[in-house]
Length: 485
Image (cartoon, rainbow, N blue to C red):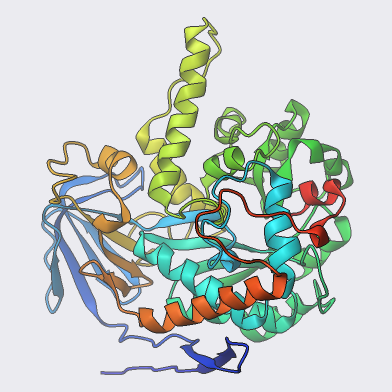
């Protein structure tokens, strides 16, 4: 059998004393003629034309989904018993700052954007080296795979040098996660002043082909010059956007298009929504972070997007305050919309939106997120011909059995521990409930990275403290914090 192997090694200095962590930074390609049959599961295809199957099979050939349906017959296949399990597309986290993966729960009580920016960008972010970016991205990517997330839109707004960006890409590739990696300039500290021109190098050298798991985009503010540059390179553009920023749209109203991704979008005016909807931009929302960090009005814009004919994706944003799994994010989106709808109905508001359904939320976490990433033709549903990004959730656990409603089980009850199998591009990333990674190596590198960042910033960590302390050197004008994060 023909077997193509690509192996690249990279090293990053992860300690103050010059220790090194080695990581595989390019994928090992498996035999593309491998055939795998997931047999006898409840199959949620997320393809409205194809439908779902109470007792169905999914046939994977190489990197693609070959067939979906009941009682499939195939020769020379590896059969995976999916009885007592739900098979569905992998989740798409439509907004994630992967570089902050080692700053988990640093500030669980933070309640405003300025405090977050002070702690991350102004205090710690300016001390990040390429190896710190690498381990942060690697932790995020592996944690995503463990929880059934197979794709992220990676808002990488600490691209301090070309080496920092390369390190992020290396980590995503090593993990085997699909990602739209979108570098953005740092908010503070010294940096190489290489952005956005370095995107030309990335496009030519690392992304000469779009036929790979990690693709390239740009994180940026509304700026005609920058947007023209991005379109010259055929890159999707990500903008974090809040109501107070709406006047900025006047500078780019004639440039808005389907290659724009607008995240958050809390407290936007009706005029702003009409402008975004009319241009067919993609909208992504972050239910927990919008509330936690008090982003404008603090209520995620899921319903606003729906009201204007847009189908938003859902993102977890970051882990500096809470966990990063899509199960929790789906529940937050569901319950926030229900609270808004039920409250308005209770007061007699006849224009109140109908209560959201679990299938709509699951679509936002799969096929709609894939569209936001520009990957709707490749992933997001178990449609034959698409790439094989799928997960298997076991339902025979004492906390899920009996699973009387499949979509309800996924959205309302399942957790990362129930994710038995994760496949990306036809390759197993998690199997039998386990990731095949050297966690001890990764943990050592993460501990060394965080310890060095804390020391460099003058932070004396206390695992029991209620608030991340303020630092005198982390002061700046608040309008910059609210416009680019």
